[in-house]
Picture 1: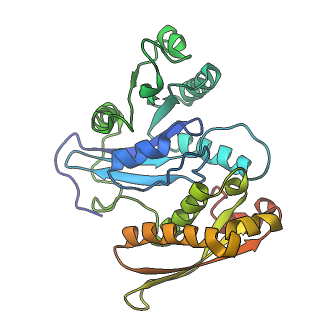
Picture 2: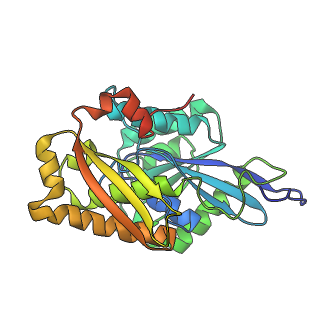
Picture 3: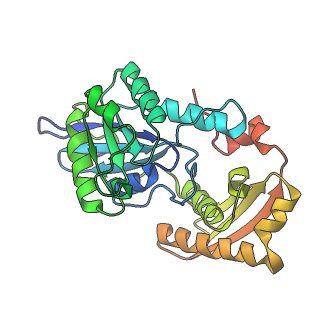
Length: 304
């Protein structure tokens, strides 16, 4: 932990990013932190567990917490995703309600009502503003005006510098005052290298596999040897639900597995700043998301 900050007005706290699947939470989290802490793919519901990104400066420490997209479900992995997102909200100091410009009015109303009931500071941000043509406005625009909910629009992809500056300026005053940072101000995430390696493999799977298969798989790091020489040795399992999914992940003559491995290894080496050897295996575990022990091992259980 860094030394206590002597100046008055120093602020530090947790900032939750919540919204619909594919609202751009992970993209915005990475932008705000200035590092890649959350995996990003075109598929909705890519984020499964909370991911922490830390932005520190002389006046504040903003601990951004990316969360799974809010959904309604009472079964399997989706139950965890729903509970995880709600737990992130309840444990945050400030909440960013990220509303996609092309999102539904119903969801916006539900989310903002939930945040009002929580009674903690929140800001509404309309992301993907570039999707709106001409003078078009979001479907929930009238609701925001009528309910007098302050909001502003950003485009994390098209206008990243402006988006970053505006969001940080809006969030920082809402944080509680603090005598010291919550984390060492030289780190940018609380994720371990082992966890980041697993996410890199899962990201490669999401980017390369089609249809429902990415949603039915998980990644478990079996071995992570960082001190065994100049090359980090990593062994990972890609867990799938069905036998035919295993064949698809491996691909003809192992082509898909090779592609996933190559992309994941490149991402891991960028994180580590050194060479990595990545060994992948595909294992079939029917209904793995109903296995309480395995779910806990994969991190898909909320700790009390």
